[in-house]
Length: 508
Image 1 (cartoon, rainbow, N blue to C red):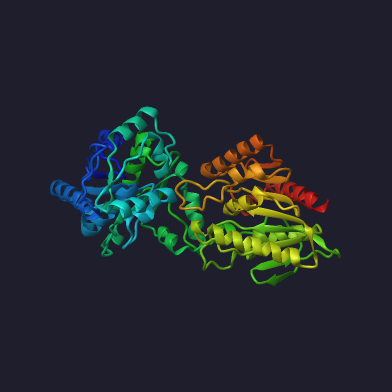
Image 2: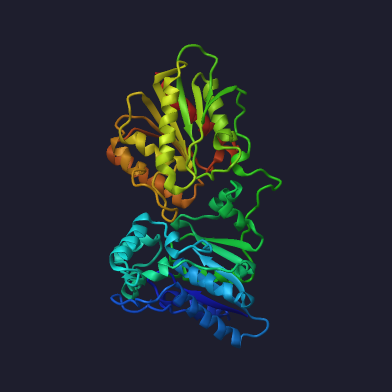
């Protein structure tokens, strides 16, 4: 028998677990919900002296109570949602021998020394906490969200209207000390198996985590440990309200040791970004100038250029760097074989906060290319891929006359909730209103992750409203990065069509 201890997140009390707890209990499991001190009461009150240590003690008290009555064959599974993972980890670190598994519900495992505030993805929400703490002192509570403000703290997708009303009515101010006090761990918790439950409408998927593992991101490499498993739910940040029965099933499967395991680097099959380009393109030599590579056509005279901008974030230590990945090299060689200068570059998008400096790297690379005598400075195209799509906002807002075309393949065109802070300047969905007659060639992957597909649909709606000149190339059965994942005839034809369109615009 499994004993579940369910710990709520910010502003919320034990009541959020009601339906999921009932479903777990009906399966025969033991269920215990934690009422964290100062939460789950009146909207207008907060316990000023409650901090993270207070909430760790709340969880410890319940662990000790359950352990005292548990049989030898019973296991305790700690489930932490949102902020709740911090007291869960703090308590599990002190009672590791009693814990069979930790479940991180739509939140990452916190690190030693990290305050809960560091895990808040929304920059406006983080600033609000910092301003409140600075103005009134850390002993005061952060006001609970109004009904239309929950989206600041996570996607509300799937929550029924009545449940959102109740969530708002029963929410409590969050004691600021709970967000500002660093989590302290001895390391004992590392022995406890962990399951992550990702909510894809809030911006997290198993596929995305695997990509970060493939890139060698040190934070994500730990998630390839055999003790770590994953599940995914098609909903927003509060699955206990939007999919309570489905969440209960996932928790039972997690307790049984099920779940998806990440493939560690160095496995037999190369990671997606290092697999071959889907087209057989000529081996055209390139020149390397700083962080920029030029693939030069045989045709003489100044030639148009296509600059390919990789996605990210990509950890700083990744080797090979993106400009040497097969897809980027393949695109650049294809452009050169057709008579244009193909350009790749490395930019410094290593974190979601790095968009300004990555955009500066792209702008500098474009100027370097335009200054090259082998390039026709008045015939340039920019082609953005994946997370590089947000950088396109700079070029859509007020396109220069020499920019003849802007292309984007499986792009992110609105910052995704839950991914971390992004400068407000990088919103192509807003910038497209200034695009005028600039041709935009947009390649959509039909099997795109829902959270990225939603940004593309929002961009398309904004484009139609503003009358932007957008051509769509669809790959119905293609995935994100289909050029190396899905080498099908459909994918090849999509690449051909997009390239023909882009080169047609820069060649006139």
